[in-house]
Length: 198
Image (cartoon, rainbow, N blue to C red; front, top):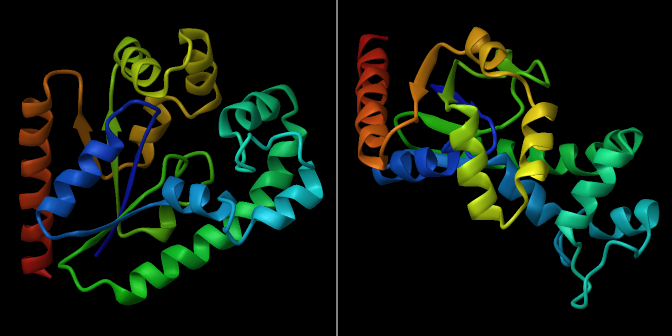
């Protein structure tokens, strides 16, 4: 069984991923794959430089992701060019992961399942629901970004309602870490039951 795990920025996707790993479930994060794709030794690095030039390189010749993100916001037409570089690499990484997965079920963390209309790629979709003010607080603290930048990212993503529409399961993360983990425990038990009943 393949689960697509989705949620907005700062909703708790990474924490959920760590929880499932602790249950010996294989987890891969599409964002991690895209970061690796654009790293200095990554598959997409030279193609990125060919299209975007060296303006986005930092002192270590790594791509400055914050500067790139701001550029994409101001030049949305370039988003497709970036995705053309990253998406094939990410998809290959996910395929390799699935071919090597041996756990009872597997999880792919994909923030943009709703935006990319890709829910049909998964047996089930799990959405992490989180109030906007909590998302802003968590993400701005974690990413050392301004509240304004985080709000822009939230506005560029699907709404909670749209994500919940495509989800088979929704876990709320508006309280403490312990409460979130308890909610995830229930979902894990549910998935084990579904597998046993197949």
